Length: 204
Image (spheres, rainbow, N blue to C red):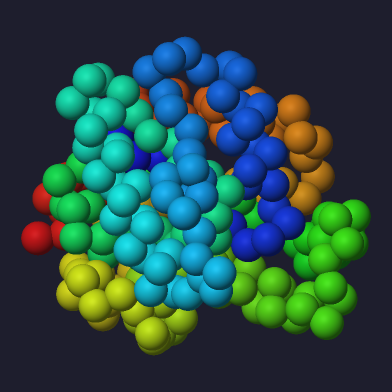
């Protein structure tokens, strides 16, 4: 299975993965895009999507050995994983980490993120909230300047419904260890089928 933990900058994706891995056994492997291949001098949307396919293929390799890939740390939207060419061959679980604007801003301030970019981070967080429940919401955020191999036809234009299966966790009032514990719990529940999962072949 491929387990995606995503969200805008400042919601705790990378930290949650690192801490959550301490609770998990060797059947889980953690990754970010930079661990799966070199980052170009100027990363593009197309590069991110092509590298997402690399992650999907890594998940398929792990699945053959009875293991799972935890992809967390990058602002990869669920729709990008689902449109990756090989994604219809594997189960995909998606957890969106979210935070209110004040909390997100405070976390970005703590890491000295440029204030002039703050509106972009807030805007992307708002888009991700919509994307978590509605596949028809502004798909151009992903499909503009996209990698040509992406299979957007799998979900673009679909109406919201129970088959659009994601989980959302608001981290605004949670500390690092609590977020990590909830993320690790979600990992186990996804593997055991106790939370919504996009099953292989759903896209056809």
